[in-house]
Length: 502
Image (cartoon, rainbow, N blue to C red; front, side, top):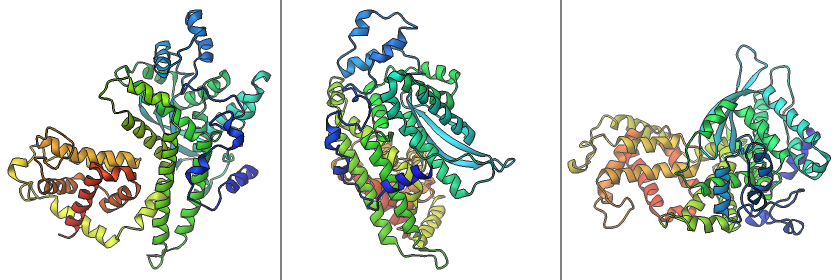
C-alpha cells in the first residue's frame, strides 16, 4: 500500500492551480478519444451503450431481432429505448456514494462504523446507511476476485479495471486506530466506492462489479421500491447527463477524474500548510492572505473544469433538449448539471478545508455582535421591523425564512445560492408580484424589499450568517454575479451589515 500511496503523493505536485490546459488529452490519447483507457473508446451515445445490455435482457424478455441489431441512433431514441426496456436495476447502477463521517462503536473501541450517504441519480432518492470497515474490506475482496476470475477474453478490460485495486485502501486493524488514521481511511474508502460507482455498465464484468456495490448499499426489496417510482413526467436527458458526468469526474481512469483527484490531494496539502501558521495560544492567524488566495484558486479551478466540461460536452445533449418544449431553457439545464457535478466532485470533499479558509476572513467580534442583535430583534413584529402594513405577510414570511435556513443544510455552493434566490423570490411572490424576475419597474422597490429581507434573515435561524455570506461570495460562479443572483447576494450582505450596526 505504501508504494501506491507514494505514487499518489508524487502525482500530487506542489502547484495547486490547475489550468484548463491540464485537462487536454495527450497526443497518445487523441485517437481513442477522451479517456485514457486500455479498453475500446467510449461510445458516442451517452452514457450506456445498449448492445451488450440486450444480451442480458433477452434472458428474461423476448426481444425481436431487429431491435437487437439496430439500437437507436439518437440520444432521445436511446434514452426512451432504455426506459422502455426496463432493465434490471442490478445492471443499471445509478448510485452516488459519499462517506460523510465515521464513528467508533462504544462497546467495541476497535470497531469503526462509517455513515454513508447514497443517492439514486435517476429517482433522486436519498438514503443513509451505516457500514463497518469489514463490509468495505470484503467488498474490495469480492471486486478483486471478480476481476481475477473473469474470462481470458476480457484480459484487456481486466488490465484496465486493475486501477480499482491500485487505489489506496486502509489496512485491516485489530486494535483501536488513531483519529488521523480513521479520517485518512474514510477518505480512501470513499475514493474506492466512487470509482467503483463510476464504472460504465457496458460489459458483463463491469455490471457484475456494479451489482456488488448496489447490493452492499441497499437490499433487493429497496431496489424494487425504487423501480416503482414514476418518473415519466420528468425530462430524462438531464438525468443521463448527470450520470455521465458523475462517471467522467469520479473515475481515475478518465482524464477528468484523474485531474480532480490530483487537485483534491494538492489542495488538502496546501490547506494543511496554511493551518500550521495558526497560533492557537495567541489566537492570531498569520495566514489570512494565504487562505484568501487558496479560496480564490479553488473557485478558479472549479470554473476551469466547468468550462472544459461545457466546451467538450456531447452536442447530442443540447440537440435533443432543443427538440423538447420551447419553454425548456437548454443552456440553463446543461449549466446546472455541470455546476452540480463538478462541485459535488471537487468542493464537497473539501468541505472542512473550505470552512476553515472562509472562517479566517470572518471577524469574530462582528459575528458575536451580529448574533446578539439577531436575538434581540427576533421578538419584533413586522410593523416594528419597518414593513409597511400593505406588504406584511400573514404567515410571517415562513416559506422565505425556510428557504434561507436551508442554506445551512445544502452541501453545494450552487444549491446554497439557489436557496437564497428562492427566499428572495418568495418575498416577491408573497407580495403579489406577477413576474418573479427582478425588473426596474417592479412594484416592490429595493426600499420595500430590504426591511422584509432583514426580517427574514433575523427569523431564519442561520447558524453563522457572516460565514455563510463569505462562503457564498467566495464560491459563487462569476457568471451569476451579473444577474439577479448577484443582486440578492448584495442585498443579503447589506442586511447583515445593517443588523450588525444596530
